[in-house]
Length: 399
Ligand SMILES: *Cc1c(COP(=O)(O)O)cnc(C)c1O
Image 1 (spheres, protein in one colour):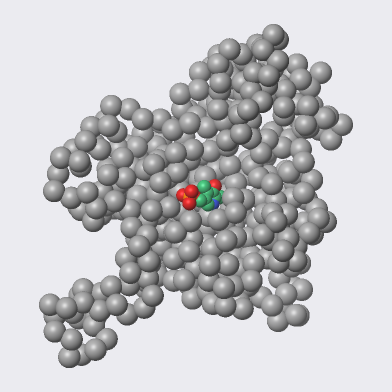
Image 2 (tube, protein in one colour):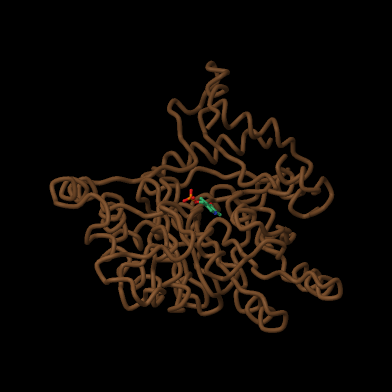
């Protein structure tokens, strides 16, 4: 994070300490869990990973969970499990972290974007519908669509699922922000309306394994494929050998896999963190409510949370009214030690994607959103006083 301009005008600081936009939470049990792995027989590929996977499955109500070394890896093997190939299309939101799009490129696929709904920041169902109609006529329908649960709010999965039945695409939910959240009174990631969901355990996310991620699914074939892909596609079970005369003390590498494994130290941390998930998400909801009441009447809007959604509030995003000077407010917050952050600059405007032919004006709602919005600090240990300081500063800057 770029912090060189923090506290630039030291004279008029309201806030004396640096408040980042997000921060991991580590307690004594987390540390003990890690130490106990360090003292055990296994650092990698030990027994804790399976326990962690089982607990994740229980929590999100999916049949299978495959823990990996990052959500980016989870997205990659999810695309491969769904058979994404060179020349095929993958669509995702333009307002997301770059990994939601890059996984398509790893498979040699063409990536395209879906414009967002200005109120929620989530993919616009209207835009998706018309884009699908057009793609059908042009014979360019996507193989995979990746809805992104921005800030922790689930997309309208029921609608997207309906469209997948009409147009024949697969769905990966990028739920990197959304563990512990709900959609229609069910846990986000249960794959009721998707093929695979992925979560991130990067330290800024809801719970952490330092680096790490998980792919969950209810489909046995996808689960097996992802398990094989994360570990070199080396098969040790002789019943699965392709060559029938291979003796059962050997192993077979059957396809091109990767080393995307999570280790036991990470899994132990994740398992310990998972126990606090509900409390963490509740605290994040409280922080959001407090910001909302303190900033009531200010010339800004909070991202709208859809009616049937319980957000995990990985992010609390505000959009300034168009009359306001974004740059001066954003910099004013930073100069006073509040680490506001833009989530996200549209992926289609990143130089890499511009080189593939995308440009300014391609997804106007996403571009409009990105020029008005930023994230306020939200993490379990954020004090009520910090929320008050942040809100007061923001109000001052908006006046
Ligand atoms: C963080 C994030 C990822 C990638 O997560 P890693 O675990 O860092 O690889 C993917 N998608 C979204 C939306 C994210 O926020």
